[in-house]
Image (cartoon, rainbow, N blue to C red; front, side):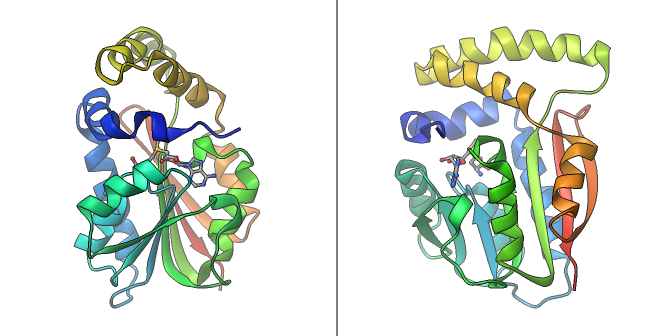
Length: 223
Ligand SMILES: C[S@@+](CC[C@H](N)C(=O)[O-])C[C@H]1O[C@@H](n2cnc3c(N)ncnc32)[C@H](O)[C@@H]1O
């Protein structure tokens, strides 16, 4: 079953920025910049597992057509997105594994830190590719464990002790922030993830940020 983000919606943004030392904003910005450099004037954009709407906002700032469509399972996360993006976004409560759009509806699809939470990853990925136009761009940001064993030592200490502690102190929810590092540990990354998206009919490039703690998958749907 998918984790219920309604429980942590109120503190989500604050904790997110704190735990990544503000780098999450920069990663979303870089993702949105790549999505928008696609040669299309005012592309139609979708943010999948949009949460509180920060990636949608970055897409809007860089020239996406209005409204950017935000899809998420959590009503509370989308309420916060709506309050931040009252005119710029249309928020729809829906499951990414069964998107309520026709094939080829969007020029750009983005998802930041969401796909790790899908119950059926392949189904969610295949839906994101389905709703994309041929030649359209899909950008996925996701957290991962670093490859380097020395860096991983520090990462493990941070993920196992500091993150749950911050979760308890700020969101009063240790469980959610114990789930976070566990879900990152289990999740496919790098070449394995690239192959999954290539199998759906995309060309994929992959880049790492901050020792590989965040990965960006830049995917272009085959014409
Ligand atoms: C870690 S938050 C990421 C939110 C936001 N994209 C960001 O950049 O911060 C993960 C989000 O994915 C949503 N989510 C998880 N599974 C989903 C699914 N199957 N369909 C739609 N949204 C989903 C959760 O409700 C949550 O808002």
